[in-house]
Length: 264
Image 1 (cartoon, rainbow, N blue to C red):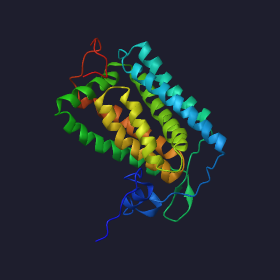
Image 2: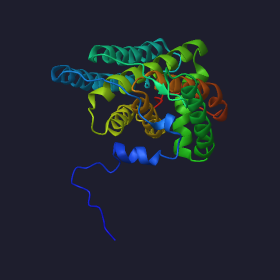
Image 3: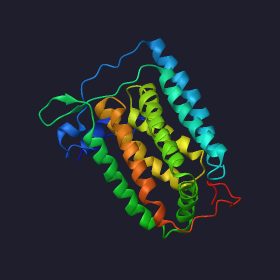
């Protein structure tokens, strides 16, 4: 029996292995569409410099935003500031692309229905996971502290900031940062940075959620070559989570709770 040796520094889960894992799915869902996103070495280096700086700035601002009192002016201002940081960084880094999907008839079109269905499926999975997490005190507390922003704030403003940040994250992480990751394992690299940025919230529930969702969004970026699919999936997932998850956690802290949302 021959054993394949893995070279030092070689990723455990390469792009080729990811493709093999998804081989059971229809080819039009997982095969990468043709694209030409080549850029000069100087443009690539510039993109990397921009994304490195914006990653640090955005993560820091994200941590500060979730330490504010729910419903406060500072909370809404800071969360919109986070979204603005991600969008500005994404646009400043270089060209972004919407992407295409391959239909069963081997034609290309902009992604629309499939990403929405994917977002709904992701929500269903998270809803089931939330039922389990509610029985685990640390996770129950972490989720409740995040959801108090939805429960105790202005519904229109919460929806606005939620959608703004979801879209902005895709512009930056699956747009600019994914492109800055290069051709070697961009799915894993961009997902790792996404999770590290979420660590700034110091909320275990958000960090845990960022892992599967980050991978899902990055895989959509890999297949479609653009940000439209992850944007639609993220927006769908966020709206459904905002609408249906808070009723599961009715014992969240009061708006006057002196402890910030990210602490347990």
